[in-house]
Image (cartoon, rainbow over the protein chains, first blue to last red):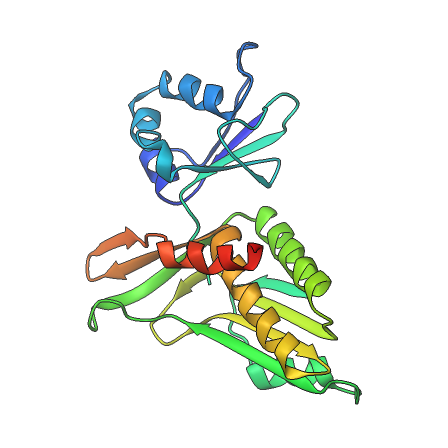
Length: 83
Length: 148
């Protein structure tokens, strides 16, 4: 599974994208974030406040409860500020 | 039609391309968003980051939704990415319909949805510092009013 990070989430995590194999027990975005936070300080820093974290599963907006099984690409980013 | 591009756009040329050869359009609304200096002359540039792939999908989805809600004859969204300067164009929305209200409303809807759904992020540079622009609560409220 490909993970992508944008804007300050990318800066705090210290990574733009990576390929990962998830432990089987991870069911949803919330579980994925908990697992990522065990992988280093950058992730802990990036995901410290989940109120300002947005995500997309296979390029569609998701939330903490969105299932991750079978997903090819999951992205994490701050609330959007275009326009 | 949607486009994500680094280069500037020419509003007159875009409108001409959209209306060329047509006599059925009665109302055409254009909205242009510009890079604004929010910090009293200190913002030197703005970087527009986006999520390639998802950005285009979201813009297509938002445009399709506007076309479902209003009887539009044509619509266009152009959003720039990359490094911009204060005063530069960021975004262009054009809507055309037989009567003005649909064109006005659809243009407002497209902007409200784009601002809260399309994966773009602004970073302002002021002197030697740069910071990510925070999302505004009022943008969320503006988009939510279309849900009722």
